[in-house]
Length: 185
Image (tube, rainbow, N blue to C red):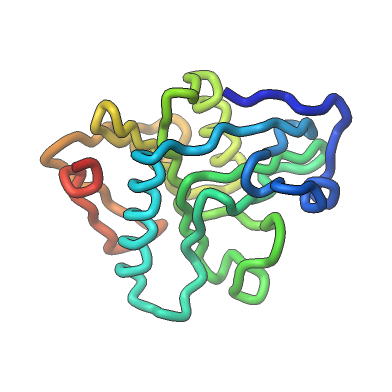
């Protein structure tokens, strides 16, 4: 569960100067909040997904797949700065076709949130709304303990996938297909 660290509104520039900002913090409506790190299970799923995204892209120069320490500005005045556990950001969404150092002023086409015991239903609902308001095309919310994935092509449309079914990258990452049985083995 996020813990508010400061009362003062913080900007993107101030956030980027904080020690460990990209490992430990996000910004919710201008307020700095500490985020819980992933556990080993969640981390292993994130790394595996990143590998599958890179393998699908089949481009050794690709810098379009990002991990849990990447941060994106989803809103301004006040700033909302979020990270997700895995993201795919097509080159045409990034200035110059490459990631910038610091917080990205672009959003992923596909964002992946991997749920751990510290996540609350309210925080997940808030994040879902923020991602789509910022322009995410597809959001996967993975529940490792329940062995299912909630697939959101919009904030009001959800399909739940379980064993025997296959995740699809949709228009965000065309052609990507991942069996749930492999992802959550």
